[in-house]
Image (cartoon, rainbow, N blue to C red):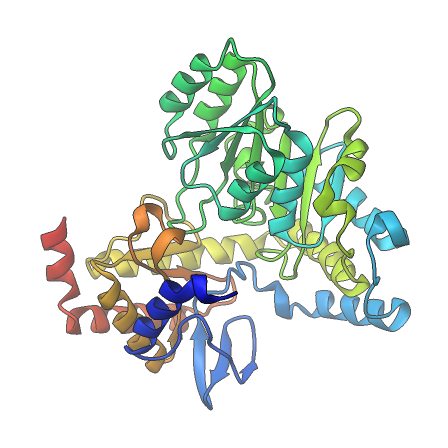
Length: 401
C-alpha cells in the first residue's frame, strides 16, 4: 500500500544523509515558551508560532488544570452526537464578542476550521477565488466543497478583479479567500484593496487570521482590524494553535442562519469536540489578549529587533516585518545544512522545502515570540549570520538575485 510513496521515502533519506531528520525532531522536554532541551542540550525555540508565549501563561495553565479536574480529559464524541459542554457554548460567545461578530463556531483544529468553513459555505454551483499562496487547508476545503476554484496571483488585487469580472455572468456565489499573514514568508494581504474589489464585484470575503490574530490590530483581532475593513469581511476563520497557545479553530460571522453550518459542515459534525482543558485555556487566553496589550508591544519590539539584525547581516526576510521571518536559501542542500548547523548551535527553526513553500523555494522559517528575551534574539541573529557566512551564503544569494 505504501509503495506509491517510494519517491517520498527516497527524498527523505536524502535529507537525512545531511544530518538530523528535520521532520522528526523529538525534544526531551519543553522548558518554556522559548526554550527546550534536545539530546540533553538547551535549545532556543525559534519556530513554534507561539507568538504571545501563552503556552506557559500561568492563568491559562490554571484554567486548563481546573477544567480537567472538574470535567475530565475529553468529550469522547462530536457535539452533534454527544452534546456540547457549557464551556463550548461559552467560548463561542466569548469569541463572537471579542471579534465583534454575532456568531462563532469552534472546530477541533485550525485545519478543520478551514475545511469545515469552505465545505459548509460553498457547493458545486459556487466559485471560490483563492490566493495562489493559500494554506493547504484552504485548498483541501475547496476540494471538499466541490466548488469551482479560481486561483489569483498572490497578493494581487488587480488579478482578482480581472478574474471576478470574467466570472460575473456565471451562476453561483463568489467567495474570495485570503490570509491575514501568510505562514511561509510572513507577508500580509493588501486587504483594503481586496475588500474594495470584493465590494465592486458583489462577492463574499473570508479572511484566515490564523497568524494575525493576537498579533495585528489595536485589540489583536487581526489584519481586518488593522486595515479598518472588518465590515467588509463576511467570514473570519482562525486557529487557537498560534497566539492563543492551544489547539483548535473557529469560524465567525454576522451571517443569518449561521447555525445551519453546524448541520452542513461535516468536519464539524463528525469530529470529537475539543476537551474541557483546551476550551478553558483558550477562553482565558482571550482574556489575556484583551487585558494585556503590552504583550503585543513586546512581540513587535522583538520582531523589529530580529528583522533589523538579519537585515544588517545582509539577509532578506521578506516584504513584511511580521512575527514570521523566512530566509530564502539558494538550494535545498544549503537549506538542510544550514538548518542542521543552527540546531547544533542551539537554535531551532523550521526547514521548509518542496511544495509547502511559495514557488517551491527552500526556506528557513522562524517565528518570534513575545517571551523571547533581547539576549535570545541577539544570540539567534549572531548565530544565523555566522553560519550563513561560513556557507558562503551571502555571495550565493547575491549571485542568484
